[in-house]
Amino acid sequence: MATQRTKKDYCWTCDGDQQHRQLTRKEEDWLKERLGRSGVGEFWLCVNVLDADTGKQCRNLRTGFNKKPFAAAIKVPVLD
Image (cartoon, rainbow, N blue to C red; front, side, top):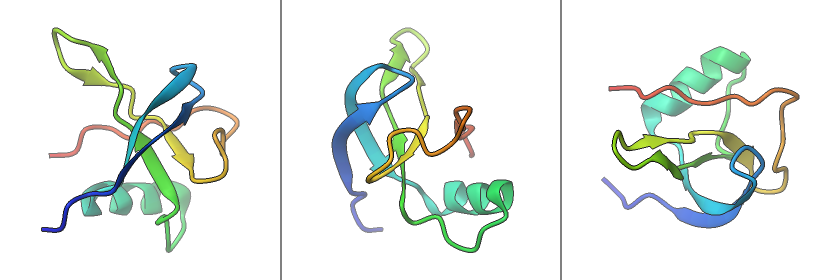
């Protein structure tokens, strides 16, 4: 598997610059179904750790150019 691309960008739910990564195939499939779209390659996932004890991440979505693409935050669930 290729190395995932990551970048540091603003997360409006964390209120600061945080590390983001591209979605995995399972996450893309989930988001396609959730949004009813055929492509979701422009979305990035915030991987900021909110709770060090549990490792819980923010998981908020943004696009490369839009820090708040939805009126209410869409957070991707952890998919196994």
